[in-house]
Amino acid sequence: MKARILPLDSAEHRSAQDLLPWFVNGTLEAAEASSVARHIAGCERCQKDAAEQAELRASASATEAAGDVERDWAVLRSRIEAFTPAPTQRPEVTTPRSWRRWLPLTVAIQGAFILALVLVLIGAPSRDERYRALGAQPAAAEANAVAVFRGDATSEQMRDALHAVGARIVGGPTVTDAYLLRLSSPTPQVLSRLRAQPGVLRAEALQEEASK
Amino acid sequence: MLRHFGIDRKAVTSTRRSAEDADVALIGRVAAGDLHAFETLFRIYHPRLDRFLSLMTARRTLVEEVLNDTMFVVWRRSRTYNGQSKVSTWIFAIAYRTALKALRDQDEPVESDAGDEVSSEDPGPEQQLMADQIRAQLFRGLEALSAEQRSVLVLTYFHDLPYNEIARIVDCPVDTVKTRVFHGRRRLRALLQADPGAGP
Image (cartoon, rainbow over all chains, first blue to last red; front, side, top):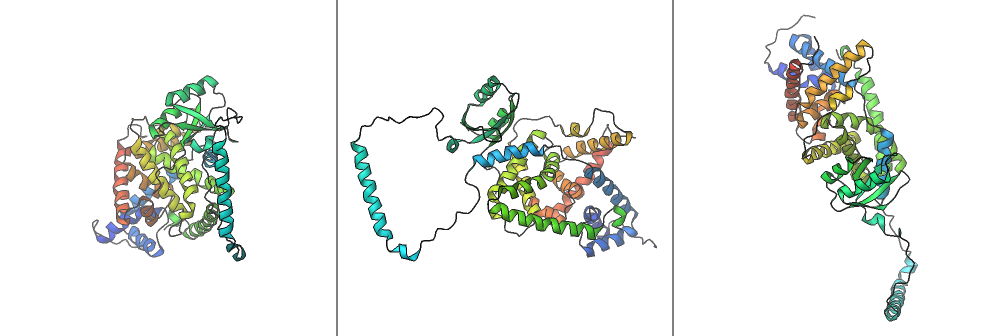
């Protein structure tokens, strides 16, 4: 093919230079790709640039992910389990027509029953005689973080880690060995401090961050 | 000419299309609360997000945190995916925003370990060692760029994304993406040439 001589600052050259990265990664539309290919055939500088970028792409593609997918999935699943409800849509409740006319009467009877119950309870002694187990708190509801400790972490390390950030365990361990925590202030800085504690494998906030 | 660069356009397009269809089917099931579908999606995107975030944040501890936050948002917000962009573009856009926020929140300077990840202490075959050195050098160069410049280069050369998708991910005009890549690679070239660890 006979090479054309093009001034390096021509509009065609500038446009080819802009598109070269995507010519090299193969994502240009057919028309753009053939226009760039035509230009490259006659432009030594673009040929050199394209070869250089192909080399960059080759070294990039040899890079492998270093993360541990199993561990990361376990942590994320714990976070999802701790954060309810799931994103399912609440099924729409439909009331059969025949029941609709009885609805006001049913509600009135329910109301009267509740009122009677309240009156009985007010008259009853105020002592709380119910048996309450030490662990029987509505824990998951007040959790704002989740942590996974290392398998070889001692109870002392776990205690120190919690003290260091003013956290308390309010639930867990879950099936993935994660503990639900209550932090007085679950800021990224506090979570980073918790992660840095010996014995702590992972720690994540239960609130969503950065969603737009 | 594309084949000269080792790219078969038809094969690439066909593979991408079937992957996109699979993604859309999965996200539909995730939106219905299917945790197994979400696990599949997580396993597909974990290596891709890991590579993207490793280079964008250059901090291993931040990668795990941002990846977890990103996929948590995907789980929670799956119903808001409206099909106007590819699922991959939507997920990478969440990852990009989450990573930028995490970088801004870092109030303490942290020693970067991106260069260490690719260097091996075990003496391997000569070729492997050279490739590792080139990658380590490349990572050092990328680290010197701004997060915005670095991310467009990574999405272009490491993830082979088209410019219009990159523009959606980083939420800026296509021309800005082209300019960022142009200046980013010029700066990267200059940094690599000036790197004292560069080979002969």
